[in-house]
Length: 556
Image 1 (cartoon, rainbow, N blue to C red):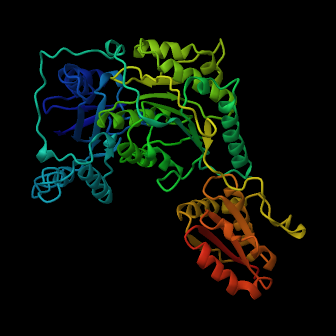
Image 2: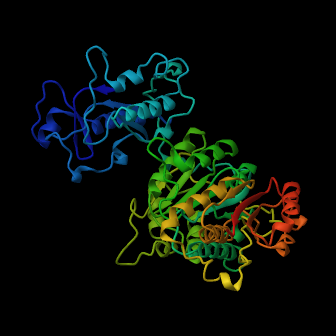
Image 3: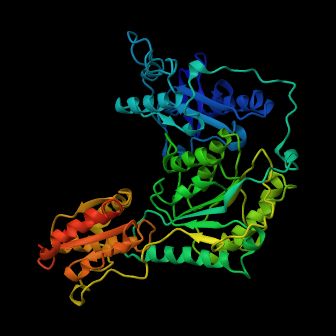
């Protein structure tokens, strides 16, 4: 914990002693102490002398303005120090953001607002039973409400149940013989008892395009991956392992969907792919990764995690790596700065990479070098001789302290296809439209409705197979939105069937054989349905109440 005068220079925060009077960058280096230097001390004095995973929390209550009382745009760079210059698990907390001044409070208060919140006797960090993670997030929220914006990074590294008053600090054993990761690779890890060899999550992304082609292409990608991995001639993983691979296309990833398969038995390998940003943890919490954290805590962490996404791949991988370390089963996490877009290139890359990871003689450095030169990795990343694959730019490895995972061949054969795919919607059955509606009901999304359509799709998915949404407004607009929502779910795995009920004959499609299956039903209330609305309501109540989501529109 540091409270006092501070200066921000580039990505570094300098602690300024009362006797210092720095006027330039050289003075900062000679007269002041960089927070990065403190991190190096942590690394040298404790991290390098124990084989345990140590989480460091640095609390800085200081201004972050430059020497000229300002921070220029060119200095707005990452808060995170270089990886080799700080502990592996570091939670830096600052009372204000870059370029801002930290409030000192008043003499009558005795503490700065930041310190007062941290030391509050009832809810501060030293209060009995106070969870440090929650305290830091509460302090950040309350200070933000007072106009001062703190920054928090990697708070997911703090155990959710950790209380400062309950912690006991044990000094490191200075005579401890520390084994390097490279030395431990010769120790074979036990073969985990898993249901799936690999669980592949292909997230299509949250950006809505002007047409539904985005979802069609993603559905085709999933089918292509299934076909290639299942191929008896080309599927190398199929010959190597006897347990199945599960492929799912998820956007709104939560426990109510296919991820429950991870709870049925540990998966040896999990591959997370996302279009664009993907599962990037937020600054104050794990963000979209929290669901995965919860699942893995309950069902067990996989031995290997592969992250493929264009933005934030390394940060996502780092969050998963640190979270797995808390469980006692450190996962090996690999990341590739590339979206999955071509099924063949992805499957070939995955097969080569997973087999390489199981070489128990490789150290972290050897593994990275081997990955850099794999032909299929180069093709997946679209690299050429003139543009080689670069470590820490195109790919990277967070190495397991337990060494390389081992997968022993098994005689167990898959009862179904080697590759199983999360059930998608009706896909081949487009929404029924009349000839006169073709100009009105299109997949061309109105620019003004992009945000609304996105929220409606998210709401429809979040209802978990039970609920109703009534679209009010001009009939042409509400019918267009309902049509586009239904068309979207033809290429997602939330519903097994997507139906449109417009007239009496359509009601017959509500076959009782669909009972118990997830169904999205678009009901367009009109004079053609008035005669059978009572029977329709009774059928929905008796057979589809808990398994259907209903979209209600009217014809005016």
